[in-house]
Image 1 (tube, helix red, strand yellow):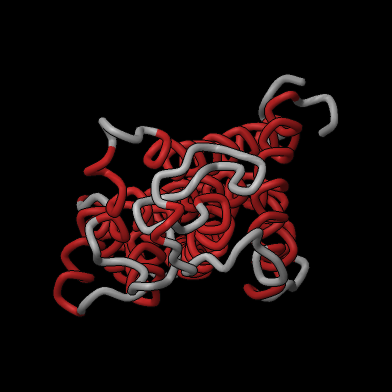
Image 2: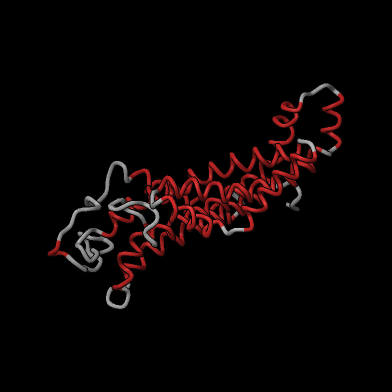
Length: 269
């Protein structure tokens, strides 16, 4: 994987952001919610590396604390999507025709709705909270994972080595564990990075609309919402959270491409 530029670049970007997110638990330059009206709209300096916002809060401290909120939400949503999608996809591929059709139809209905739109509808109905965002995005992304996993799992289950395993007396669970999951790993890895990218954008968008992390929890999306009215006067305030959202999405995408290049046996090395 060291020979893959995409993997190295993506891993470096995401690794740096994860270090920042984990480090925010122990340290930030200033308390993220500390207000100093005498230090409003300060530019970058030695005391405030990224400047201060309209309330005098340190921008870097809020970026660091917001990384924890956004990346944790993305990680949990991705985990939910993989668990739901993998389970439904393999179950559909290994089940009788009527259950396969039912699961596929249900997943297709969810796929027909963009994940962000579905999240907007559910969060608007249930009220803003990070937990609701995580669950909604996880279910929406899990439907896409289920559709792709079902198709690839069906191909694997019809492979000669699976037929040989059945004739040798292997149970369905043993076949799924030994053959299906291992052969699905490259595909699931790429799907995980795609789901994580969607989760980051969805969490940031919903927080921007006031439907995500509840105040005063720092979040990159909430930083965009609170500073957008000053974009013509102090454009750096909106630049920093937008930049970190972009870095996270690009980093995850590059990481997924790099892993896919090295793990997919169908690609020419």
